Image (cartoon, rainbow, N blue to C red; front, side):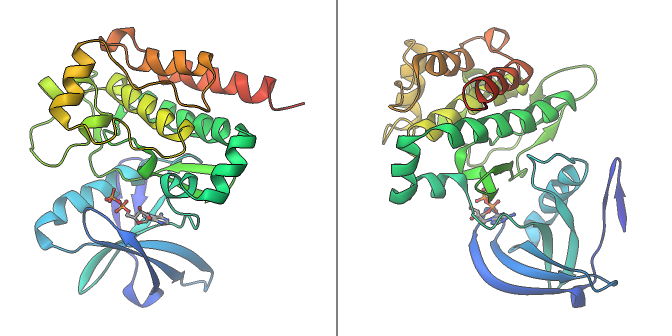
Length: 284
Ligand code: ADP
């Protein structure tokens, strides 16, 4: 087994894994549900990400190595790597799939329009997971509703660490070098212009993720292209108030979209805000 700093990234024997159904398609290849039968014959339902091209092997292994160091209820756990013709990443299964797909279902939309409590709980859980990453100097760089998965109705988990990076001890910033497909509509201006990523640029993305949640999965900025979105941001325009977001929450989103990174709240503060709402408004 390859050790990875804090957490282990075990190599799982191929005969312990069977693939069941196709769940989706990711950047690296297909994702399946599967069953892991360990040596002690304990059986576990898992998600299996299959690497499609050998060219991205290093990035794939890096993603798994980053995830192996993270242990938090709001972060999808990696269980190990497995190789059998193709390289596979075994992940904790989130049977309800992505939060984005979930909130787009008409029946869910009716229920969430009646009561927003689940939205606040998922937002709190994502904020807690991001606070954990912030404390560890880990930048996600791809926080969006499509990358939040549901383990069950009451538990949201951050996934897709394909773009994530650890920042150095001397700086809070990571300067990205590689070009590729970037989620511009989720990105802070300094990330777009200077490729400067930090927990503060993750906070901007968290704001967009909140906007997606409270608009029940609408695409941010509709069909505007990246250049047009940037122009809006420069002119001080921001995404409009979602129907289900009260004005204090919309105000919080707008703080996440402060132009200067240092003017944005930390995940510490965001977590505390959602903690306060969920305990004071919804718990009795
Ligand atoms: P991408 O690289 O496109 O951002 P992923 O490769 O992480 O996305 O996943 C693609 C799809 O596979 C997701 O949208 C989701 O439907 C499914 N998926 C990924 N990981 C899991 C998991 N742990 N549990 C359940 N479904 C998953």
